[in-house]
Image 1: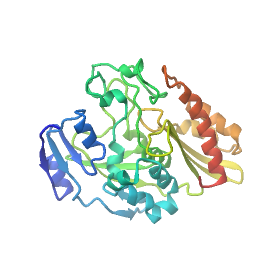
Image 2 (image 1 turned 180 degrees about the vertical axis):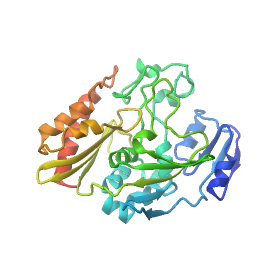
Image 3 (image 1 turned 180 degrees about the horizontal axis):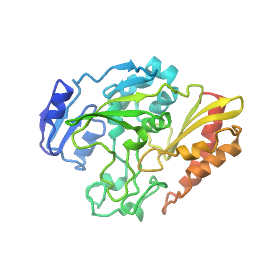
Length: 327
């Protein structure tokens, strides 16, 4: 690990003021420290934000919930308000990582974790995401876990978070603050597709800090499912995951949300595809129609073409489970 400066501010504005070129904020450190050990990233300054007052959860005026960026993944998953009002989020968090990691990891940090692409972590190989312009060996190499949607000629990496898939389905908002003040970013606009700049994972400006995440009042607490398909039963990243939520009027779909994980550079959701199902019976034929719409344009590589059919089946199953109730 390379030498670096260390600072521990007591306030948000102080933390933002300390930020300079090649600084990183650190809280749980469950991903950043790995990246530093592997020489994937070499910050010259770490700004320890663990003492900042960002550990509370509070009601919002519109009936939603505001979650401080330093709430741990464990505390969030087991919070009574989350379990009762946003059970889809609780279930997704508990499907990820290990209890020890969830105890350390923070809500804000979860949004910023980086891809688990083998080539990204191997500093001895080219990688456009780690070193722009160097190439993407994953396209013709080991690509079983890689993207089938939204990839580019520059990068085929996927976003690894389970929590973010649920937040995408729920329509969360990310609150960030920088030297220019505070701003709100809808979850759909927070993470980026790789395009020609795969080194950029999100739309935050340099030096901005996540301070909170807001959940809307609409919670989909009756008909929901989080389905994660992985190579082993625990502590593995998703090959494909599905956050599914429905509002039903009898057996008819009033609204539907589906977000996919493990298939793209960001949680994958299409409100246009979801709208196709409004007013239709909540059955497998409708769910298959949504799966086809969500996966339109999907394309695989040497090892991961199986994920297209896997995702199609997972979408139908997750929505079928959601109709039956909590799953």
